[in-house]
Image (cartoon, rainbow, N blue to C red):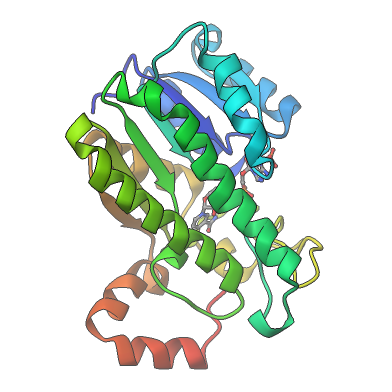
Length: 263
Ligand SMILES: NC(=O)c1ccc[n+]([C@@H]2O[C@H](COP(=O)([O-])OP(=O)(O)OC[C@H]3O[C@@H](n4cnc5c(N)ncnc54)[C@H](OP(=O)(O)O)[C@@H]3O)[C@@H](O)[C@H]2O)c1
């Protein structure tokens, strides 16, 4: 897909990978609908982008799945048609499965899975009218499990499963679906992660600090979009190789994850 001139709705645009994606997509000539909860951050991002007048800001909360169809109707009602939805907004979670409150498991699922699929379903007719693309920023944790991430990993596995089914159903109608699985990326994802009882973790984890930059991640995502790939893993070291190791040497992989907390 050629990105210049495309109309793209991007969630999680207020920081991290989303902010880097907004910059790279605006540089490539796309018109953006920038979404997250933090309105002030979205507005200053919009003002900083090339051709700021082409972009709009739409506040939404993925934790409130029932509100999203109305947000889509308000935003696209008068100007239907969208080329790409990038489902990037999300939260992480850190804590042992046995110690994590069910309310925390549900909260992660509400944002990363239910909110994301509700938004996708509401936007789908607009994408189908242009034979468009859904891009899902899942995770390597959506392909493999590890320690201290049961809720996060489950939510990303669920997202990939849903989106593989959507692709199977809608390819015949021209929809393209790309699942992106980043390893560690230097963002605030661990700072904003929920702990066992729902507090924020508040620290940059070492694995995250040693990851690739958001700009490197965004550039790789744009390449995958341009090539209309189905799935890409983006990352360095063990976080990039983990799905391949699990696929071909599963017993080795399960021994590694039982002995080492790589988060
Ligand atoms: N960083 C990594 O190592 C890594 C690796 C693999 C996958 N990912 C995935 O990449 C995506 C972006 O994460 P990031 O690393 O850039 O983390 P981040 O810096 O914490 O950014 C998360 C983004 O999601 C938005 N968000 C969170 N909760 C939301 C909600 N309830 N409603 C709407 N928006 C919400 C945040 O905006 P507001 O707070 O303003 O709402 C923010 O823009 C996530 O889906 C994450 O799972 C990250």
